[in-house]
Picture 1: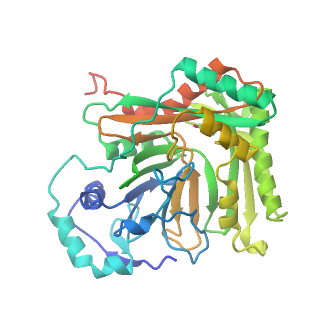
Picture 2: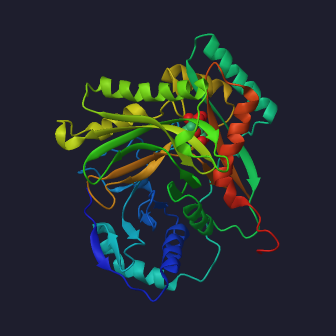
Picture 3: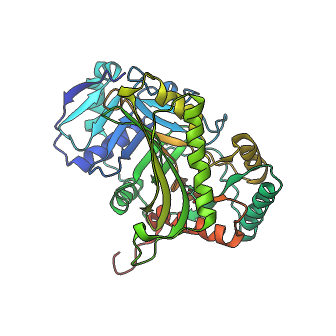
Length: 413
Ligand SMILES: C=C(O[C@H]1C=CC=C(C(=O)O)[C@@H]1O)C(=O)O
């Protein structure tokens, strides 16, 4: 339930500096913080939780308007190492409305103390981001990844699975003077249509990303939306998405995700959904096939549809596979590393408006570590998959978030 109260807030500081200080306020006191920019929006938003313990919820969030307001950060597969998080909104700051903040009753009661801490934070450019205590994940060489793809194709040919999405992690050094807030700003600029995020929480670490994939959304007009996003090709200069040609492999890979979503609606006995697509959409330097699904919640007697669909959808065959359990079992056995929060989901729920939730699949993301970043990318496999091409596709996907790790060229330094 969004029971936040609005407070006028006009410190004598530029808006960007206020944002940095709010993040510093969270991090220097060991608290979690999330920053995100919705697709197409101009400005980011921030959610800060005062009580660390209340962020570890263990369950996918409820999406009803009466559910708590906050920011969900869910792993691919939950475990003690990768706890599901829901950051309750004690403090919400929308940079599009910089003259106010919204606070919970708990934060309102501590406002003098918070204002005091905010005003006296030391001037520091380096922020103490939360870092995961897990070892860095194993990274696959090209030969190892191609062997994983070959194993996936063999499992498909043997009939164990119809589709599986293999993935890998890559370690990249951080460029000199890397600043996660500046990197977040760069992602916003580069990818205006992505959901851009920066989440930092104790025991979880710090994750940055720019994802194109909606998992479950309920908008201001009470329309539930989800999408099948699968099938990839490079966006080459001069290419128009509308005229892109697709290989049979991509169409099949995509159709399995769309069919899975239809089956989720069927399990809930919901027939009144709208399906549009597939059509070609651009995401960074890539094209994807996308089918959009919508349910008009004011026209169906189904108040828990968003929550129920979220629980059925995750992980979709755009990141797991078909059938779900054998595909997940294949990944557990063969993938050889811990995806952690990659291919999980994230986003605001009832924040700031009760009844509005926007959850995205955590793709095109990286995990920040002390000296390096861990980047993640995966590819959907079908019986037609070619290992070398699937490797190339992961390379392409890694470029989306990898773009913020480039050393500035001597000319621009
Ligand atoms: C698994 C990823 O992308 C998914 C989303 C779109 C297209 C995909 C594909 O064509 O394989 C993947 O299913 C990733 O970016 O790591």
